[in-house]
Amino acid sequence: RLLATGSSDTTIRVWDVSSGACVQTLDLHRSAVTSLCFVSLDRLISGDDEGSLRAWSAADGQQTHHVPGKVEIKAIQFVGSRGDIAVRRSDGLEVLNAASMQPVARIAASEFKDDVLADSAVVPDQPCILISTAESLIAWDYVHGQQRRLSSESPGSLVVARLPVSQSTVPPVLRRNGFEITSRSGTAHREGEAPAEPHSARDQRLGGSLALPEIREVV
Image (cartoon, rainbow, N blue to C red; front, side, top):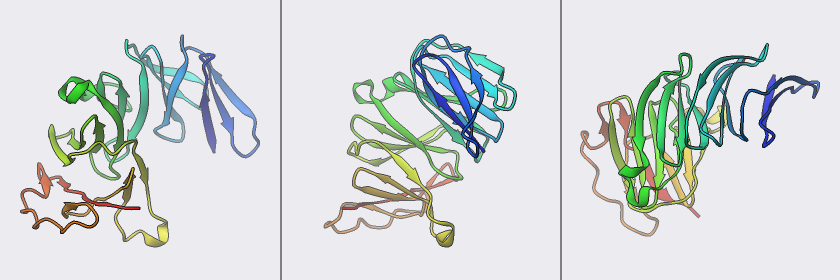
């Protein structure tokens, strides 16, 4: 098992978890490394604060792709259901194919209030990305190019968690500053309020591919 760490000294180090030994040092970035993402056991994607994206073979330390950029990379997330990566910058969110590093889709921060794209998270097993803006929580189905507002408030930073294997029949849970979001079809309401009337089947789907997550406030 491998672990990768990025540093402000522009290097990436790949570690063997069992032995604790550094097995590779990757040093082609020209500025601080701000994000790392393994997309397979051997393939690593990295981003820096100048906007450069690089793909590596973690086994031999060879760079396989370089995608230059101009805006700092905030996060890289793997969309495992389609083999893509979601790259978040302050000016927008871009999806690229993890193998070819070719662009697939993009959404600009200028589409949102105050040009703010605060955070993002991948919905497990679906080609959907949750986006936090200055005023709302949005589900973006990037394959069909559709968006749906899930909350009229900005609930803060986003963390995605899978339930234990023993509870694998329960849908994946996404937690976000007081909100619990599941991938079931459902309604959105705050605790203490009466649930809204059920949405129509059409409202519960995005392009026929994404069930509208249920949102309820948690303490």
